[in-house]
Amino acid sequence: MKTTRIAVLALFLGAVAGAASASTTITAGIHIGHSGRAAVDVGFFYDDLAPYGNWVDRPHHGWCWVPRHTSHRHWRPYQYGHWTLTDYGWTWVSDEPYGWATYHYGRWYDDPDYGWEWIPGQEWGPAWVSWQEGNDYVGWAPLPPSAEFRGNYGVDYGNADFSSSLQPEDYVFVPERQFLAPRLDSYVVSEVQAPAIWRQTRNYTNYRFENDRFINQGVPVERIQRVVGRNVQRFQIADLAPAQRHQGERVLGNRVALFRPQVQRAAVVAPPPARPIARRAVMTAAAAAVAVRANHAARQQRQALEARQPNVPGNQQAQGRQQQIAARQQQRAERQQANQQNQQAQGRQQQIAARQQQRAERQQANQRNQQAQGRQQQVAARQQQRAERQQANQ
Image (cartoon, rainbow, N blue to C red; front, side, top):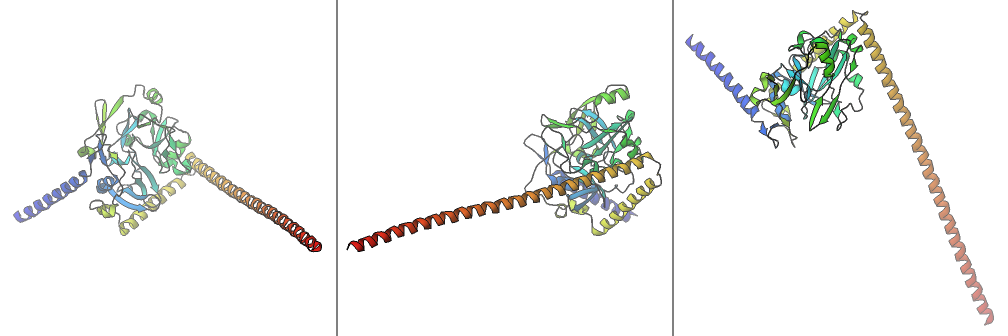
């Protein structure tokens, strides 16, 4: 028994020492930037999120992070936590230990194979979400990777069709009167209900950039105050100590403390497989196969559940919306084809004009040559006549 207790104690102390060593190694990646705030590079995300998920290399987005609980059927980003109104607008206060990173930097993407994946980013924001409101519901969904910001003009979705980048079931909807609840996951409606609610809402996504900060305006504060029947308390953003980043963001008095380091651009950042801590979270081929099968099965179950409810307005509306998206995509393809044909026609016309120009230039050159030859012949003829006169005089 004594030997067993000693062995168990040794294992426990070894685990603690290993965890402390890993924590110390990760924390060593934090330094003080020029502004006086904590600063990291993207590699810090690779190491710090390793205990909570896996890193996978995707063709279009590079190294992405997959939370280990995304296999849970109803999990979605921005679901476990609550909203507060700060000097940065609507700010997400997460209950998840990795929330300091995944809900304030980068973008989320619902991968067909792995489910929800997080793509690291460099810009800190109070939250990166698309907003919907209407019919007594408020909803939000993570902005897709195509969403970028251009100066003071707000969200720019690039060449992607935003409505095809996010699906209604991507949105987390809650009754509007519960929008300020401290635990919103208790009020989230099911994914099956989301399409019907989405159809009866309008988009309120509205970011602006002022005083070197992004402001998440979203749903009008006045609207929320009318619904809940009281003023919405306003908070100030404060910095949370790095050592407390996994304990959740804290609301103290009139302040919300968050860990929000500056993410600096580094010339070279070692990818997860080349990092001693992060490589332990790189998904192996066997684990990837299991994850893909589980995600496909979950999607099939959700589709089967939706198919068993043909009279749900949301399903009919979702089908109509998909048809509209397909029609817009077809129209876009036709416009692109027409543009290509116009460009080809213009190219042919330019070629014809160029050939005509070349022909005209050749004709002018020939005329000049003929004129030159005529002048030379005239000169030769005069010289011949002069020579003949001289000979006759002799």
